Image 1 (spheres, rainbow, N blue to C red):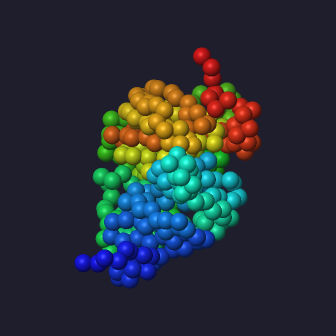
Image 2 (image 1 turned 90 degrees about the vertical axis):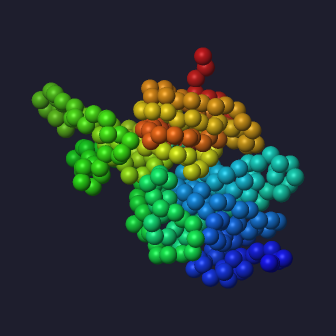
Image 3 (image 1 turned 45 degrees about the vertical axis):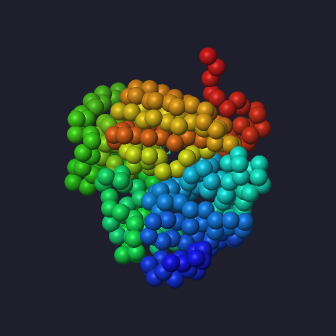
Length: 326
Ligand code: PHB
Ligand code: FE
């Protein structure tokens, strides 16, 4: 029986095969069940399955838009070139007790450490992008690695899926229809373009494309017009991050149901529960954080505005945090 508190060193010395990862004042160590985060002023602990799923998204999305909260304590804020890593920055109790801690890094430096940690901590049989029911366990001592799963690139169409030279359709062999979408229609749309416009008119079966995604909570850009990005994704279980917006984003629920927790971005105080059924459309305001729950695999379209001037326009109050007044 040990009466001594664990430290990065004692965790590393357990002989589980995992390394400790350090950047600035932050040190990350893992054991069988948890990620341990040590920082000047304290320590934090996150279940390893949740931690790896969040880390995977933060890496794959290049720190995403705005804030990626791994939970209500730890996360990153994207400043598009630099990134803040924080403890308690958006937690009312940590802030009012002055117990928060924030450090700024060059994005490429933090990305490197996160990638190394992911590579070291994700072992054989666990895919952080997969639904929990479709993958193995991340728990226990290190065994092998799963580089194929963690180096997947986010899919981004230049203009639209299926156009010449753009993202290709998904075939049954490489991307079988997911078990939850066996009932979706897979027929092709008919295209009747005026002569001379054959290259400009395009349509494809969106459901047949998205329902073949082998990952969850990982929007891929399926069509893009200037800053308007249509990002489609299949969702099952819990969105691994709590996303703090720096702009408005729209959700279109294409199938099934997602239940969203919507909280104040700065404090985490609950603001709304949004239950979205197939066909529902919602705008997530620019001053909230949100996390979705999808009991059955569902298709969601996330409509993002990629305009780089938006965070400043919302932060300065030039734009209201909500997009429409009724
Ligand atoms: C979001 O934060 O808005 C988000 C992220 C990933 C998803 C869906 C929504 O798959
Ligand atoms: Fe979001």
